[in-house]
Image: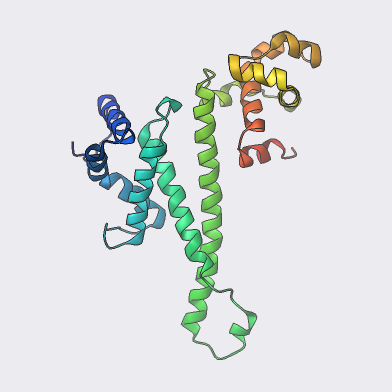
Length: 249
């Protein structure tokens, strides 16, 4: 199976998933086939990150992309709800960020004396541009981390019958309503029995919550998906999303 530059059809996605499963189970021939057939995909993703054309065997970034794609095969969760290529794209971009970060650490700081002594002007400019590139890299890294958190949360929410895209529609319009929902979520987090109920039964312990919070059962039911999402963010490894929840209005 050789891919071309077209949108992947559902049957093709299903076929790829089957191949990934076989590769994870130890079929080396299938793994090699997937790595070969999807080379244009992972090179395109990596090229987009470093903004240059990449050739496998010539560019370090291309090798990193292939290794990351191979890593994605091993770590992909078929039951997570997301397609393999969406997951692989995130893994590749994260590994590219790690690579750029390692490269940036090798760049020396720019001392003020650089401007006081007779130094090649081009060298100084290059070092300034390098520092600016590091700042851009930091922004790109944080953006990618946020995207990865959203991806992981979306996978987690799928087990509760919720999609991340639903949250935009169901999010309370008024700040005080959002604050009350957050307080309910914190109550869940603070009581192990209630949290265990949520994670095992995949639903809110409405009766127990109604006794503990100043929110009506009707409101709890209406905000069920939103409260569940907030709770999962609070107890999970979602640094950037937690920071957003704690941000003052």
